[in-house]
Image (cartoon, rainbow, N blue to C red; front, side):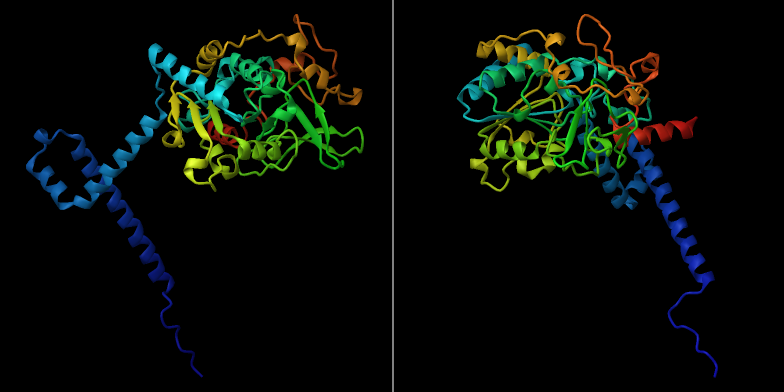
Length: 407
């Protein structure tokens, strides 16, 4: 019996013809967009009759190109850094000071912008990590082990000591809030701490605070640090939460503390955060409440944030400048950071002798430039760079691959 040919199934030749037609159609669209784009760039008075006719004939293309240009302009404006003048800044800070004094439960949300004064790059600023990578540029190196708490970190700690701040929720992994002296129960480090490694095989989880960046060998979905737990010999892991991951550790993430603080908050102060990541955490914003019953929002940032329209007050200024003025308004003294009193030294666990060569990162010295007698702190540390490993995670990994291909 003779087989009937399949009806409706195109042959290989027909499929290739369809694919070719689609390619030619896309190429034609690209040529049309380039042509219309060149005409639109010309002043109207300088366009020829033929060029004017092209615009009339392809109105849909003109509209699409105009929409794209509007979107580009909006994006460019959002990336610009704006500064309030001196008088405006003082006026706004006074308004913020009144709000803080009247607040019953003030919670502070912090981002990379509070650490730039410590020479730690932010992410979305003009010289930020993601900004530089998107432009195909290399990232300027900064030795995170040499960073110290900034004036803003110290101010936040003092505001907590004065019972004006109840809780701090941070996106930063640099550990500077902890090193400023802020109590751990008042701190949620949602994306981890670069000085802490843990053993999740232990119950409860065993924690090891180190005097060096533990993320040297870690990255997205690869969190093993190469060291072992002294209790159960399980593999130690860093605490960093990369994009695309969900953090589940109780400490240092402390999601429970963050959620409880947000629930009780009547005022939220956002310092140096673009809020592009924090806005996704609904539990931090009480969005299940009517707008009138949500915490009052105050933002300190040089760039646009997606929460600007909801803020009672937006201050365009550097965090250290704003906090310095704020502390004067509140009559709270700002002590100078003293490395000898840095809590990390009392919290830190020394490496075992067999772990002597388990890292090449520089070790934090206690004070007066003294060296720390910890295995692994040798000449190799000088060769290590702060942006290796898991610190900048996924985005930095992509940047390195692009650089290799270009080379």
